[in-house]
Amino acid sequence: MQKDVSSCNTYNYGDSLYWNSRYIQEGGSFDWYQRYSSLRPFIRKYIPPSSRVLVVGCGNAVMSEDMVKDGYEDIMNMDISSVAIDMMRRKYEDIPQLKYMHMDVRDMSFFPDESFDGVIDKGTLDSLMCGTDAPISAAQMLGEVCRLLKPGGTYMLITYGDPKVRMPHIGKPVYNWKITLFIIPRPGFQKPETCSSSTKAYLEPVPITEEGFLPSSFVLEDPDSHFIYFCKKDG
View 1: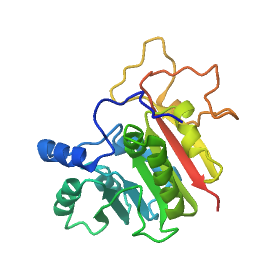
View 2: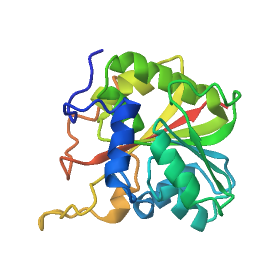
View 3: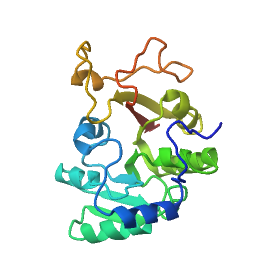
View 4: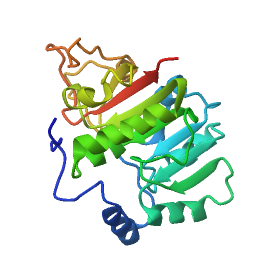
C-alpha cells in the first residue's frame, strides 16, 4: 500500500514539531472537517453519553466541550502536540469530565486493554497517511485503537478518504470490525437546485461492496464530502 497523497501537501502532519509550531502560531480553537452539531446524530447513536470516550488527535478543537454540554461525562483527549495539550488543560481545568494527555496515537501503552467504549478520530489517521512510513504508522495506530476498545466498542473515523483508500487499512481481518459507512457534505456546501436529497438522507448508511468500494452507481453529491466509518469491535 502506498502513501495516500490525495489531500496531502508538503507538511509532515505526523510530526509533533509541525503541530507544536502551528499551535504556537495560531492559538485559538479549530475543529477539523465537521463540528459536533453536524456529527451529533451519528455520535449519540453509536457512542452513547454513558460511554468512556477517547478522542485521538484532539488538537485545540471544541468538540469534546460540546459533547460534555450534551451529557457526556468521561472524555479522555490525547494529542502528539504538547503545546496543544498544555493549552487545553489550562482551558478546561475546571471541567472534570475532560482530561488531556500528551501522547502518540501509535503508542498508547499508558492505557490498559479494553479501556474505552468509543474512540473518535477526526482527521488523525488522515494526518498519519500524509506522513512518512504512512502504512506502518496507520497499522500501529489502528492496532492500538482496536486494543483499547472494549468488546462491542466503536471506533468512529471521520476522514476525507473514500472506501478505496481507507478500507484496505480499517478492513483488515485482524481487527474483525463490523463497518458502517455514512457520507456527509463538507460544511457550507450548497446543493445544486436540481438536487432532491435531504438532510435525512445523510443519516442513512451507504452500502460498501464486498471488495470494499462504493457501488459503481453511487454519485457523490459533494465531491469533497467527508466519510464517516463506524467500526464496531466484535463483542
